[in-house]
Amino acid sequence: MNRFDGKSVIVTGAASGFGTAIAEKFAAEGAHVVVADIDAKGAAAVAERLPSAMPFTIDVADEEQNLAMAAAAVAAYGKIDVMCANAGVPHRGSYMLKMKVADFDRMFAINVRSIFLAAQACVPHMPEGTSSLISTASIGGKRPRPGLTPYNASKAAAINLTRGFAAEMAPRIRVNCVCPVSAATNFDFQTMGKQALSPELEQKVLDSIPMGRRATPQDVANAYAYLASDEASFLTGVCLDVDGGRSIQ
Image (cartoon, rainbow, N blue to C red; front, side, top):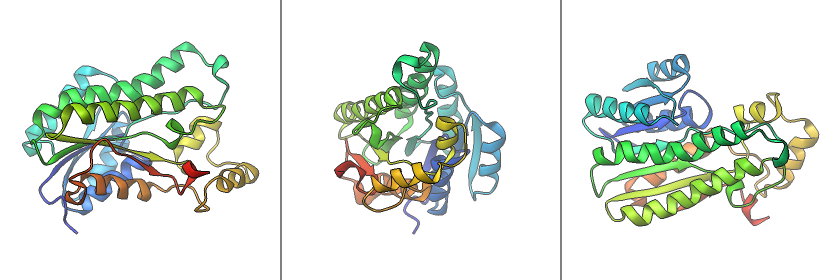
C-alpha cells in the first residue's frame, strides 16, 4: 500500500524501538520522513536506509529545538501531514517515594511536555482536514502497577492531553494516541538495568496478557499508520490499546 504517498511525517524517538518501526512503516507506504532523535548517529543510520528521509537531532523537551524541527520538515517537504510524538522515557523501576525529583521532572518533560511542544511547533504547518498528531502513551496510563507510578502518571497525562487537544482541534486536525503494553525494547534496560526480563518475570508479564505475548514495535507502527490513514478519518480523541487484552484482565 502507498497510503502516505507524498505525505510528510515527523517521528520523534525514531532512532530505536517503536520509533524506528513507525518511521519504517510510513516510509514503506510512500511518506517522506523526518527521523528525529536525541541520538544523532542512530537517527542518521535509520534515515540512511529509508527511501526518502532526513535525520534531525532534537531534545524533545526543548521548545526552540521543536520549532527548528518543524521548520526543517517544512523546508524539506513543504508541510507536515503527520506528527508522531513517540519519544518517551521510563524510569528505573522503584517505588515513587524513592524517586529523585530531578528524575520525575525529566520524565514528565520528555513524556508530556514534548507532546505539547511538538503540537505548538507543527500544527501551524499541518494542512487542515487531512492531518493528524499521534503520540505514544501506555496501557499503564490506564491500568497502573506498583514500581512505575510516576511513569504511568506521565502516560495518563499524555492520554488526557490527547483527548483535550482533540476536542480543541476538531475538525481541523485529528489527535490520537496509542497505548502499548510492555514490549521487548530498550524499555527493559532502562527500567531494570538489563536487556531482558528474567524467565520468571517474563512469564508473569505474559500471564497478564490474554494474547500470550508482549507488544512488538511493528504492532505499534501498524496502529500509528492506521490512525494516520484515511481509514481512520472519523477517529479523533482515540487512545488505542495495543495491549493484547491486558486492559481487560
